[in-house]
Every structure is written in structure tokens, then in C-alpha cells.
Length: 314
Image 1: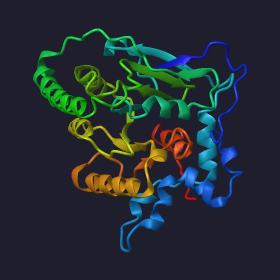
Image 2 (image 1 turned 45 degrees about the vertical axis):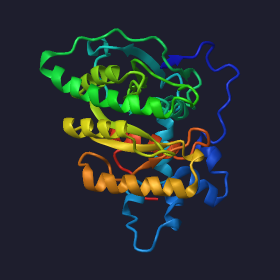
Image 3 (image 1 turned 45 degrees about the horizontal axis):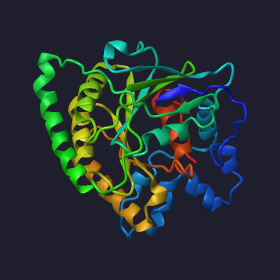
Image 4 (image 1 turned 135 degrees about the vertical axis):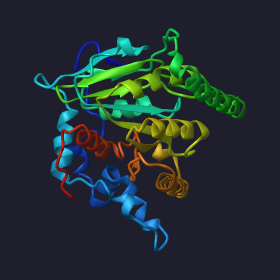
């Protein structure tokens, strides 16, 4: 969840490469790999491969700098945790443009949000461990929600049995967390879906997606090591059914070999091209550890929320 950090900015230092000014000190190839990690894979494509989806969103330096300013807090531009909700009647008023981040449990969602807000020393990203109260489903949505929950439950059992011997899941957000970025937009951290709370995901997230009319873009996080999973496909089906514009973000790219990452990128691009209507054709690759792709993702968030209407080519 997103909370104010006690004690303010005392003793705080910007993480390496969190600021664009730090990245600009690197030699050119390394700099490009940090800002545009998808372009780094282009040189390994087979001849004749369509490279258009690799460069659809390619802002210049000025746009990257303007968007970074939105994620840097100061007295005149506070970045605040607003509230958490388990029901939509507990959500804050939809006064600003909004983006939300969803993904499987342990996909690295909290780590990515922490990286996005790494220039705001007074805030901290944590994972809520308080279980939400059960919400009564609306009768008109009950059958649809039950069907979706049943699909997730089936995937959950398979995932649990497959990974039973692996280490426990680290992160699992159980509430909808709202984070206000000045007077410009709100970023929303959604509950993780997977074997730990498929019903919670259905009840909270479906209601949010259907009722939040100020939602400008949903960011669907997919593990860059394992690619699209069954539960991710169910999330895609839900976004497509509701007509929600979304974009796929591949996380943990620092953990994937180049060959594996390229394979997953090409497979997901092909899936997006053939099987989706509301998904932005370009994937966004990120590493919360190395800050690869974080600067570009900040810029895209600023763009889709209307705070960067003109993005010049680099």
C-alpha cells in the first residue's frame, strides 16, 4: 500500500539511476538501454521482423524531463497517499485523471510503484497485510463474477500445486490504494490476483473498472521471466469485455536472459496484435532494480493522463 513515510526526507538519498540526470551521465548505449529497454532487443530480431511496435512511444529528452517533474514532490507539488478501499463507496471522489496498476501476486507491482515514486522522499510503498471485508455482489453481476472467480480459482489451484515447493509469495496487496500526484492525476494500486485471493480480485477490481469513469489507462503487469499466464489471460478478457484501454508492462526484466525476454516479448506482441482491441501495441519493459524503463513509463503515465499532450520524437 502507499503510505506517508514517517520522518519526512531526513537521511534520504535518491537511488542510483532513479533520476534522469543520473542516467544522462552514462555512456550512450547504456543510457539508451535504461531509458528504452525495448530498443535494446531490436538488434537481435530476425530480418523482416516488424519493428513498429518497438518504437510507437518514443519521447524526446524534454518530454522525459517534464514527466519526471510530475513524480518529484515539493512544497508546491505534494505527492500524497489518499486512502485505501475495499468497496467503491469507500473510494475517494474521481476528481482527477486516474491510472491503475494490476497484476498477479508477486509480479513486482509494489516494487515498480516504489520505483516510479522514488523521487518523492516522503512516501513509501508497502504491501497491505490486512484482509478486506467481504463485499456483497450485486445480483446483476453475481453470475458473471462467480464465473470469473471460478476460472481464477481453477488457475489458482494449478499454480499452487505447481509451485508448492517454492518460497512463499512476498507481496500481496489486498486493498485498492489511491495515491494523488499533486493536482494532476491519481495512481491506483489494485489488489494482486492469483491463488491467494481470486474472489477478492473479482469483487473489488471488476467494480472499480466498471464504475471509475475517470480511469484513463490500466497497466497490466506481467512477469518478464514467465510471460503471460492463465490468470493474466483472464485479466485481459475482463479488460477487453469492459472496453478498458490498457497496456502490458513486463516486470523483472533484469532476471530474464536476453533470449527468454525476446521470446516473451514477441509472443506477447503477437497475442496483442491478434487477440486484443484495447491494448496499446507497444510493450513496456521495466526493472525496478536497475530502473530500466522506469523513466519511459513515467512519461507514458504523464501522457495518458493528459499532462504531456505533445510528445516529440527523439
